[in-house]
Length: 242
Image (cartoon, rainbow, N blue to C red; front, side, top):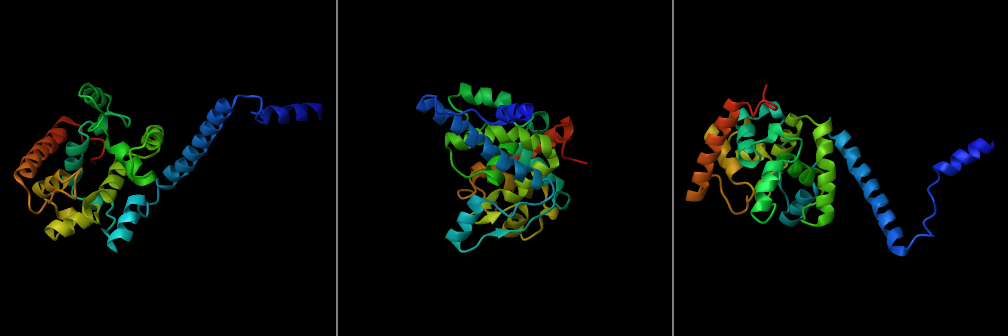
């Protein structure tokens, strides 16, 4: 019995009352953060097998617009050119990193910021598990959860979630709905040009139109087509292609 009581005392967390207020607040903050990470971690395990029903932003847009358009498309039903176009446009080294592109981050920091250094994996964490703002708290969760999805989800799964959650026009989410919206065809029938046009509207889908491209969008589309061909040839698309 004395041994059992000693063991229980060992398991019981020490009292914080003797600590300064700021130290108590810090400890509780860390504990709450860890609990929330565990909460989000349960969804990471769940979404290995199940498709997420949406996200906070989609719910907000559905309420604001009175409805949104989204049809889930499994990875194998989407034209391969679409996946390559997304990676070429958003994260060319997708197959080479574990969630963070350190080279892109260093380049962005050298230019005075980190915008443009967000990987596909980071965007999936933000869009599937978290909420749409730029707070330091959200970024802390993103930095913690990104390696976790890289550990538990395959690269194909991460990209599948991205292609089904990304917004391509106001209230139009996922490549299947976007293909129907802009071109009147399914995502499985997209040409390399059409796929690149869809990828080119990112990350500003409310300001760009894949069906009515501006000169900028045409140039961006050409860059994406070339980039998609490059990653297909040099092996940087190998992690998500059969």
